[in-house]
Image: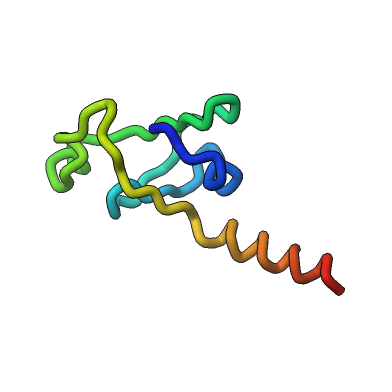
Length: 80
C-alpha cells in the first residue's frame, strides 16, 4: 500500500493501521518510497471487502492516533 508522505511518519513496523476501516498490523514499511505491507489472513479476507481490492485501487488510510497524541504533546512542550 502506498501511503501519502504526510502520514508515513505515524507508521511503524508492527504498528496499527486502518485500511478502509479494517484495523491491521503493519508488516513492513519502506520509508524510501512510503510503501507498507500488511498481512491479510483468510478470516479478514472473508469478512471484509479487502479481497476485492486491486493494486491501483484507492483505500482510506487511518494511522494510529497514539502517534498523533505524542506529536501534539511534544509540539506543546517545545512552545513553552
